[in-house]
Image: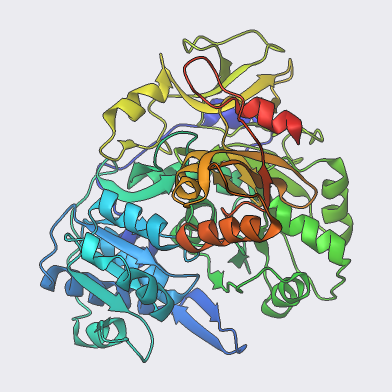
Length: 532
């Protein structure tokens, strides 16, 4: 381990192999016959099921054979619509081994959100549970590309049984020979206008996450390491801040995802299972603080947090109550884990995101992609060619081109860098809402609300929230003759919740006679935010 941050930056060199497959790296590479633990699954009942790397290697081989037998070929898309569960990991890793592209989907997605992502990705296979199947059944007629649906658990609901398919599949499989630049996963992200975009990542994205993981978690793996996060395995945070790179390093992952974050249950889980490393978004930390939970027996060694600004008060709480330093990270779906903090390398400055992780060139640039002087506000940019950077937006060359300026990918966030190299987040240059660690695009919500028969116009913004950082608020102009009532507001909330997702529905609905707009008809969301 380097003795200083400057030494770590100078010494770092990317050394990507000519051939690399994420599925092999997370299973076969550690299936040496030693029986190393890979996945520890805690069911809602409290029962614990343990998987070794040998188990994961065999199960992923079986499902890779199932996918090939179903007629899928290299590059075909395999969607995974599941919570934290062993089958979630198995489906993704099997798709990687087979040279296919996985598509993670959030279990709280409603019908329209699910349909859009399945249609846009052209997924041929979906792995889900009975709850997901019920949603799929309402939109499947609009998805001609989807040919096979596998349902986990003892009841397949009339679809194909995932468990039965695994039983039939051979546990021997020759992985597809992939390069680091071959596509492996599409993760949909939200923007301010239009539909969500699919960030297409190559197999190299796993390697690109490792420098930050080892920087923040102090040279992981260490003896006894066990990693957990309450974040869903449908977003880049759950998958690539925790699941895949942790397995790649030969460290076991704890799988447990309650329907709702419970501070008492989370603390008890970490203590009882001996969790050593954890990714807890600031919202989870705020809930822990509010609940004033105290738990004996915590064995945490390192804690990563990110997605929202932490602040000094919350950082002090983590140190006092959890016994570890809160180490912030910064990134986004298109290019993740590029900034971080660790007082072993430099003092943590409350409010700062940290410094660029060794191996990542992160700078403050102007709109043309030219670096600006220290202390100057500008766009947070990441230099092209970074292994953790997306290959492109799926089937969207115009959006891909617009994401870059000169040699830099523009994150869409404004920031500044001080004379000592610390990066400070200032604001968003777009209107993406950051709520409970999720990045939520107002465009999709506005489109959904406009489908309500009572709505003429709508503008969606984020407003300050003490727990979530921001909450979604909808400003609604009703059609003539319609009265804005509490009942109608509740109906509009339910309309979004059922069609998009529970994390996207507006927690506040305000009725107004008109929306502030530009001369070209664009909603001035900054004015709506100013209204509160």
